[in-house]
Length: 378
Image (cartoon, rainbow, N blue to C red):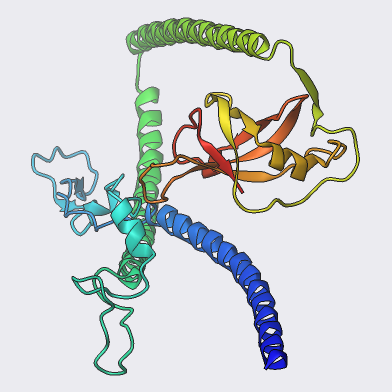
């Protein structure tokens, strides 16, 4: 009986070790899938903001009538005209149309929902194969299909715009050809008129030239005055920016002075901390310390670690280098879509003789501003 019990205990121990091994592997895979899904979700939200939520409304086509009557010396009171923009789709000119917005808690939760849910929160089962349905209201597929349909509609609008640009190019080319022909005829007419002018006409022409030069000089003077006013405005703007930079510099100096006062008496080690030795690459899971100082503007915090964590990172004699690890920060009792999670930090510099480390705030992970007494965990 003792042998049976001993064999049973050994079997249970072996199964426990195997279970721990697989649990550790599954945890790493879970972290990979979580980060990958978060990245895909953020990219879908960004892409949705570039896709128009609906087509532009119909717009009124401006009435443009082109004179198509022949140019002669006869005065025409009612020349023949044709509409140039009769079939022109004016709505294609509409700009800044609203785009799809998936950047809300409700939409993000829907992007994470693969299956269609019933009102009671259970999966809606398909009557065909008995499996949970993945297409329908409230599912991720609904939002992706909506994004796909709007992308197709926007592509169709783009192709239509290209076709209209081709038509407008042909219309402009035709009008330019007609204008060039009229210019040739106008040059011939002007040459004939010039041959028939007398001295009085020449004097009038000289007078008109002088008036044109005066007008041009007046216009140039106005442009110069406008440029001078613009330069003065730029000088004022640069002065304001300089004052703002000086204010920021003063604030930074005050903050540095305040930090020096707070850290007076402490001995900061070199970047990375430690005197040499090895550097650990991971820590055991659990709470490691708390935030005792934080500055959200310059994105750094001071973390006070417990003795066990300092021993784990630096060794018995604190002979190891400070590991450049990324740790998590949470706020007990905080309720949000991400739970108690606040942000991630990266260890930067050890304060010698104390269980304190200066760390950088990783802005890409930050949910809210870091506060004193927030818990640091790995």
